[in-house]
Image 1 (cartoon, rainbow over the protein chains, first blue to last red):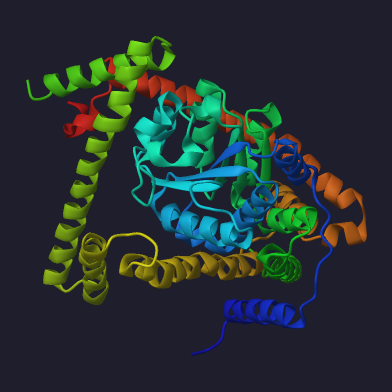
Image 2: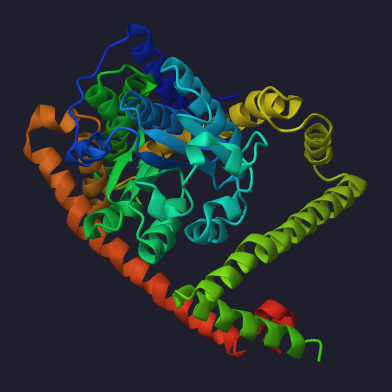
Length: 269
Length: 208
């Protein structure tokens, strides 16, 4: 097989990422105002407040979602907030439960007292609206099959009015539905941890205040880890992403130099 | 009659859900809850069955014709294996279902997603060129954003991150808002057309 320019580009990317990870260089990351706002929001909640964490993502985005979710859960558990986990996409169910259990164990939190996972409910719009009317009717039992009414942490929690806010961890447009139906219809405060590709989608909602706070991408995860002072995979993932960006910038510049040089010679299209 | 009855059902449910959404009456809340929790979920279950049957039929036809045979067989095997594992051992914690999910589906999906980086690398070398003024503007915006997000921009000047923020907060946000308003108006119009029976393509037969 004859190697073409794109093959060299692929090879270069692999070399750049592997080299950066092997050297273990740690980028200095300054928290952005958006990330700081999220941090301050969780800091402002009194101990014992109940927050709903919605795992609205698929497995494909896990390398980016996991550091975001872990940073959020670590902050929440370290602040002694009580968490209700739900999933509005089927693939978020196993991932969400596993992550909650893993981080809860780090902080010695007890299932049913400090956190609970209600599991997946299909048809996300229906699920969001339905929880606005009654959470126990929407989830008669938790992910492990325990009746809702038998779980001590859920005593007195019936609708969004009984919880402090919803944090959507998303790789797509599901946060929009939390904003449109959870916030607009029922007035619940919505915040989000989203993949970098979704950041500009939610900018208008953040700017209008319908989305209270947002942390985006691996950079956001690394910034958040900085703020809470707990290391995680965000900073390491950010390093790979950062050197990839540098490499892409270099390729764009090389591509344009070649293009203009060829055009000057009369061979450019 | 075959078309009239679904149209009437659709129109009635559309108006009912609209009224229930804006009503704060407890009875309206109870009816809303019933529709959202029970009926909507039943419809969802049927759509899943429909999807699975459709996938199986398409795959079997392709296997018969010898088109993409190994991939079709792997797809069908997954379609059969996952429900069997779920029914036999459940889907919680350390079940075989979750093992397959964690060790097969998650790595495969992440791998496919990660391949995007290589496509971007190839596209940035071969396709992302300042061939015209609009292309040059797009290129400059992309470079600014990339430089700002990867901290390389602040090494040159503090104006680079500031310029990237300006691009994100003004031109990008304005375009996004215009798109959102367009989507909203389009959804409203389409919903009204479906409820009033003007839009009938969802019944099949090209709306005739």
